[in-house]
Image (cartoon, rainbow, N blue to C red; front, side, top):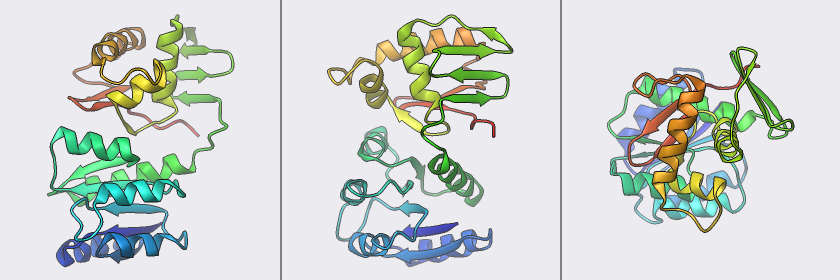
Length: 227
């Protein structure tokens, strides 16, 4: 995998290059936003690891510019760990968010997850996650061969989750995706419907198999689809 590391700290760039190269990846780097945009212009990168605190362009501005012409997966790597920064990055178009300091194993797993999602064919309309089957055209959900009765809103919410597996989806994104553009702050809707989905899927929120919660930020569909 070809990975672009964007960070103004030479030590971080060296550590990421060494760690990810040791896992078999091809790593190249940029120290600021302008250099990152130039490096991305040739479409070499398959995943971008981006620091928000860059010396020239703000990391959010880099994400915004990249998203105008590229769907390359972007993982934000930042010391800014509060909810507002995380939500802003994800809503701008980042695919995941990892706080510094970080464990190389966790970061490598996140890199693998966003890359797998980028390779998923969007036209796929029947998704299987072990014994769970999501059939989009038939609006049908089966668990261990038994049909799960879902309301239209529950189905749309599940659809938003399962078609973005392993990705942290913010409250605002889910509300607008499921309820419409006039929504964005009614997080109580999500809590109610996520609770209903979990009950119907037999998912324990304290030890989730299907839907994970990032408190104050959003939700993540845990498993990747079966091949």
